[in-house]
Length: 382
Image 1 (tube, rainbow, N blue to C red):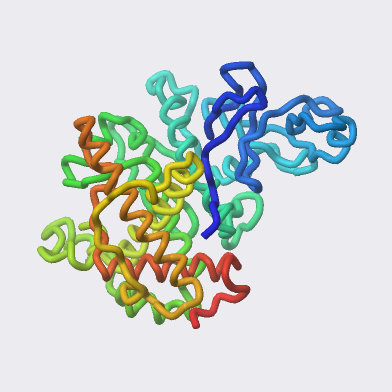
Image 2: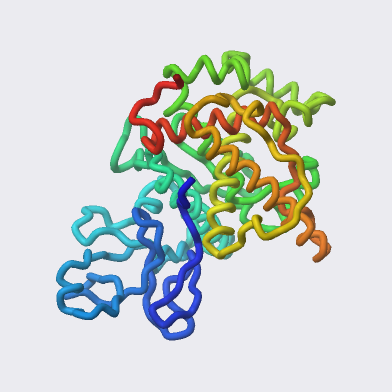
């Protein structure tokens, strides 16, 4: 299975640079992220004001410059979002594919909330990581505001008023709302402990909520719905009543045998969203590890590998590739959990993938790869 979003980048000077960087700290070269190529590029000024080109050192620089694409920077580079993404120079938008998804951002001029900009910047960094992977997975990522008003995606980043109603993180027909208090480490940790969650991050929130959006886009009203019902359950079960029951009674005692998390047991939609988030965790973390040369093949890790019979469609042509991804993930997280423990930190991945969860993850993989054209040009589950 090919890498999608490796995160190992280098400046033209040879120094390591990172996904969030807009300037090389070693030599001062401007940097920008090309989301279509999944690359952080070293840049040099282009032939006209506001234009940029990829820095190159070819045998014939003049010929390379003439053929090199021209970029412009996202308008949010100068905002607290500190966006380092690039766009084609001819793109009619002022903001990149990630920033143009925003409908509402925090009030940056509110003197009573001077940290709004800092918290929003953390949210935007997590969102860019999410969106970069979605684009490389060839999933539909269009702004509901400026590109696809019927089926697009948009974000509201809000903060609860001191004496006002609490802002709830959630999804509603393409709108993802996130309470930016989740970017406050102390507040997020307090909520994590109060809810007895083993894992709670900004990126995890965004991956979960966007999973609801892609259920609407890729599963609802499609031939995939029958497979979804067989694995996750009937989504027509009253959602509000299911949430209320979860808050009052908690998860069933046997949830670890059937779900990836306690919250996944609330309703089939939440089960899907939790598994979707874990699928994105797997893809991005493995790609990052491999791009840095961290291969589990060289580690002696004892574990029982999953076999084809654990998968949703064991006879599908790409089943072996997904199985390799899954077993790579199991070995990698086993090793990284031990690394975390050696530092006195919580486990890197505090979850156990049971056979029912593995089938759900494979189903999501099939939906993603079929819907994006990675393995098929149709969206048929057959």
